[in-house]
Image (cartoon, rainbow, N blue to C red; front, side):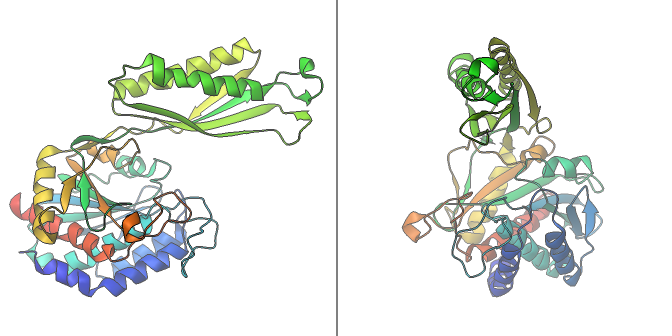
Length: 391
């Protein structure tokens, strides 16, 4: 039924590349995506769809009859706050960069929207498009869920694709808990500033921050069962402005990743306990901020994984959908996965042997654009076949 989809997707490759390159040059972050959302709305309208706002910056549209089940497909739209050094002729110059491939995800979902609209009369149910903001700050999926993306109509199953620095054309997955949870924290140590030559007159927040960084590593190594996966990493420490001025504050930022919600809650609490205890020891104080409640691990539904991997292999060749190792990295599509049966696939866009030397979140990363029609075809074909088999 859907085998013409791949040929149709390949025929629109130039259009998909044009989407991607336009979006790549205007990367925007978080929930502030005015140019990106305007472009998505414009294209959806041109394709005969009726885009609607969901939450702070999300967009949705429905394709198909008002009967049957509903299958959701998601593409995230936001970029990272980093300057691009890829050397591409269509590089961003605004200080942000699509270094995680969300321009690919948005473009592929636009392609799927066009394909599905052309085959709307063949759908045995509805496809709900989810163009999501703020994945990089782990807040966009929750905002759209809280704003009703899974309702009216009720979503029965959901799928997302994400690019991966791996062999071109594979669609990787992990069973069960596939990606880690995420808690993003900021610790601000409050000391007492003064002259660097008279430390006894001050309370050194840099010294306290160093002790906190070391003490937090005991959560990983001494407080969690070694059979449980946890990664607590401090990735940023900032303090001071001069060699001879002791600052008032020091700021540490980092993340906690786990595969278990109880471990997640325990690690958050121990982080707060340790920070407060270390600060008290050195006569300092601290404030600790988390970005919301964090996100859960990504859970791939077994039955949906069986179905969708079969469709992908049928569409692109046996072995395209294949198991890969679970990831400690996080994907906030996980917020949907604890609400409805969901699957997340990682699509290979080139590895080092194929000339793609840098992975995501690297300012030099590049991706093979030939992936775009394949990703669009997966989105469309999987939606069509799942609805056909689950009438």
